[in-house]
Image (cartoon, rainbow, N blue to C red; front, side, top):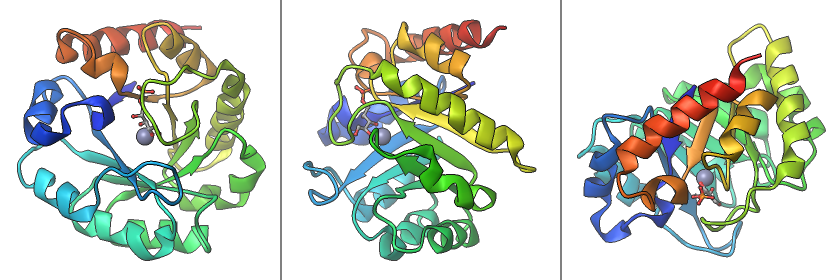
Amino acid sequence: MQISPSVLNADLADLAAEVRRIEAAADWIHLDVMDNHFVPNLTFGLPVVASLLSQVSIPADCHLMIADPDRWAPGFAEAGAGSVTFHVEAARKPRMVAKDIRAAGARAGVALKPGTPISQIEALIPSVDMILVMTVEPGFGGQAFMAEMLPKVQQARRLADAADVDIWVQVDGGVDLESIERCAAAGADVFVAGSAVYRAEDPAVMVELLRAAAENGARP
Ligand code: DX5
Ligand code: ZN
């Protein structure tokens, strides 16, 4: 059970300090890269990610909500991200994108928007290390969890389990103390939480509470 807080709703003017608040408690820092093209919002790109990585020690989980990941994704791995996730809807050659990310030294993740069926990534499975099932429409933090995505989380878990390699299943969007248990029960094992963590009085304590809730949900 891994927790990956998203800084989307943190103080972006003080990014390194915001990351340090959860660094000891969390497994990853989730960095939402948006290009105002694939999604209707704009955050930060490679220069900001690279600069941040030089100042913090927690591994980076980059979620690229951008057009043309074929061109841009490997650069995030080269900059030192531990995991780089691209959207299957945006990639021209998804298998090549995953291969290039791995060749640059990071884990490769593939993400699906809520409207994208799991069948879109079936053929990609041997090439990826993580499946990200979006539980909101990508673009903004603070949206309501889409419970209707839980069957897709189960489908992703089944695909992952059928593979010979260890593939993680990540959920992202509206994950809080209540929804995280259901996600864990459906088979997710990496949980992104933005507003739940950064709106909490003590973000590090919230990370531990989320982890405990996920472990609770995962129990048979
Ligand atoms: C949404 C982003 C998420 C977002 C999650 O497009 O991919 O990572 O920050 O925020 P919450 O947890 O507030 O839904
Ligand atoms: Zn995200």
